[in-house]
Length: 122
Image (tube, rainbow, N blue to C red; front, top):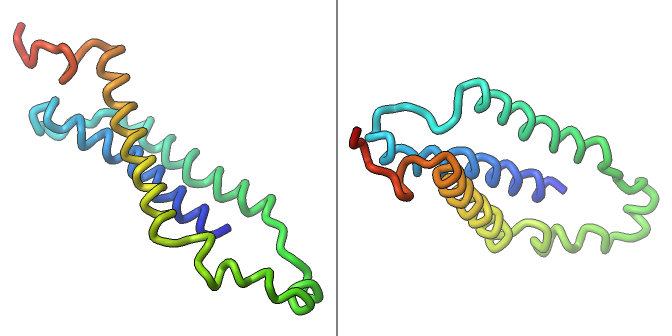
Protein backbone atom coordinates (compact mmCIF):
# COMPACT_ATOMS: atom_id res chain seq x y z
CA UNK A 1 0.00 0.00 0.00
CA UNK A 2 2.68 2.48 0.91
CA UNK A 3 4.60 1.47 -2.23
CA UNK A 4 1.70 2.63 -4.39
CA UNK A 5 1.53 5.95 -2.57
CA UNK A 6 5.29 6.52 -2.90
CA UNK A 7 5.23 5.67 -6.61
CA UNK A 8 2.22 7.90 -7.17
CA UNK A 9 3.91 10.84 -5.40
CA UNK A 10 6.92 10.53 -7.71
CA UNK A 11 4.63 10.22 -10.73
CA UNK A 12 2.60 13.34 -9.95
CA UNK A 13 5.74 15.36 -9.25
CA UNK A 14 7.36 14.28 -12.51
CA UNK A 15 4.12 15.02 -14.36
CA UNK A 16 4.18 18.61 -13.11
CA UNK A 17 7.90 19.37 -13.22
CA UNK A 18 8.93 17.74 -16.51
CA UNK A 19 6.26 19.67 -18.45
CA UNK A 20 7.57 22.92 -16.96
CA UNK A 21 11.14 21.88 -17.78
CA UNK A 22 10.09 21.29 -21.40
CA UNK A 23 8.59 24.79 -21.44
CA UNK A 24 11.76 26.52 -20.21
CA UNK A 25 13.57 26.54 -23.62
CA UNK A 26 10.36 27.65 -25.35
CA UNK A 27 10.03 30.64 -23.04
CA UNK A 28 13.68 31.55 -23.50
CA UNK A 29 14.49 30.52 -19.92
CA UNK A 30 12.65 33.64 -18.76
CA UNK A 31 11.24 32.02 -15.62
CA UNK A 32 7.63 32.10 -16.76
CA UNK A 33 5.67 29.03 -15.80
CA UNK A 34 3.82 26.66 -18.07
CA UNK A 35 0.84 26.75 -15.70
CA UNK A 36 -0.71 29.65 -13.78
CA UNK A 37 0.16 29.75 -10.10
CA UNK A 38 -3.39 28.96 -8.96
CA UNK A 39 -3.39 25.84 -11.15
CA UNK A 40 -0.13 24.67 -9.59
CA UNK A 41 -1.58 25.13 -6.10
CA UNK A 42 -4.79 23.37 -7.10
CA UNK A 43 -2.81 20.54 -8.69
CA UNK A 44 -0.81 20.01 -5.52
CA UNK A 45 -3.88 20.20 -3.33
CA UNK A 46 -6.02 17.82 -5.37
CA UNK A 47 -3.41 15.33 -6.53
CA UNK A 48 -1.51 15.21 -3.24
CA UNK A 49 -4.22 15.09 -0.63
CA UNK A 50 -7.10 13.26 -2.31
CA UNK A 51 -5.31 10.06 -3.40
CA UNK A 52 -3.65 9.68 -0.01
CA UNK A 53 -6.96 10.26 1.76
CA UNK A 54 -8.70 7.75 -0.51
CA UNK A 55 -6.01 5.11 0.03
CA UNK A 56 -6.12 5.77 3.77
CA UNK A 57 -9.92 5.58 3.90
CA UNK A 58 -10.21 2.33 1.97
CA UNK A 59 -7.12 0.72 3.47
CA UNK A 60 -8.17 -2.40 5.33
CA UNK A 61 -5.61 -3.96 7.60
CA UNK A 62 -5.88 -7.53 8.76
CA UNK A 63 -6.84 -8.37 12.29
CA UNK A 64 -4.01 -9.27 14.68
CA UNK A 65 -5.27 -12.83 15.00
CA UNK A 66 -5.16 -13.28 11.21
CA UNK A 67 -1.68 -11.76 11.01
CA UNK A 68 -0.36 -14.19 13.61
CA UNK A 69 -2.12 -17.21 12.16
CA UNK A 70 -1.08 -16.49 8.54
CA UNK A 71 2.45 -15.04 8.59
CA UNK A 72 2.78 -15.51 4.83
CA UNK A 73 0.72 -12.32 4.42
CA UNK A 74 3.91 -10.33 4.88
CA UNK A 75 6.25 -12.45 2.78
CA UNK A 76 5.54 -10.38 -0.36
CA UNK A 77 6.64 -7.22 1.41
CA UNK A 78 9.80 -8.85 2.69
CA UNK A 79 10.60 -10.10 -0.81
CA UNK A 80 10.02 -6.58 -2.18
CA UNK A 81 7.29 -7.65 -4.54
CA UNK A 82 5.16 -4.56 -3.86
CA UNK A 83 7.90 -1.95 -4.06
CA UNK A 84 11.23 -2.41 -5.81
CA UNK A 85 13.51 -0.65 -8.29
CA UNK A 86 11.59 -1.88 -11.32
CA UNK A 87 8.31 -0.58 -9.95
CA UNK A 88 9.80 2.82 -9.10
CA UNK A 89 11.34 3.16 -12.56
CA UNK A 90 7.95 2.26 -14.09
CA UNK A 91 6.23 5.05 -12.09
CA UNK A 92 8.95 7.54 -13.07
CA UNK A 93 8.82 6.53 -16.74
CA UNK A 94 5.05 6.96 -16.83
CA UNK A 95 5.44 10.40 -15.27
CA UNK A 96 8.00 11.49 -17.87
CA UNK A 97 6.01 10.08 -20.81
CA UNK A 98 2.75 11.66 -19.65
CA UNK A 99 4.44 15.00 -18.95
CA UNK A 100 6.05 15.16 -22.40
CA UNK A 101 2.77 14.12 -24.04
CA UNK A 102 0.87 16.76 -22.07
CA UNK A 103 3.37 19.43 -23.05
CA UNK A 104 3.29 18.65 -26.76
CA UNK A 105 -0.49 18.18 -26.91
CA UNK A 106 -1.08 21.50 -25.15
CA UNK A 107 1.52 23.20 -27.36
CA UNK A 108 -0.07 21.87 -30.55
CA UNK A 109 -3.65 22.59 -29.45
CA UNK A 110 -2.86 26.13 -28.36
CA UNK A 111 -0.71 26.70 -31.44
CA UNK A 112 2.53 27.99 -30.00
CA UNK A 113 5.98 27.10 -28.86
CA UNK A 114 8.16 24.35 -30.18
CA UNK A 115 5.82 22.45 -32.47
CA UNK A 116 5.17 24.49 -35.60
CA UNK A 117 5.66 27.88 -33.96
CA UNK A 118 7.52 30.90 -35.36
CA UNK A 119 9.91 31.08 -32.40
CA UNK A 120 9.44 34.74 -31.66
CA UNK A 121 8.84 36.32 -35.06
CA UNK A 122 6.17 39.01 -35.17
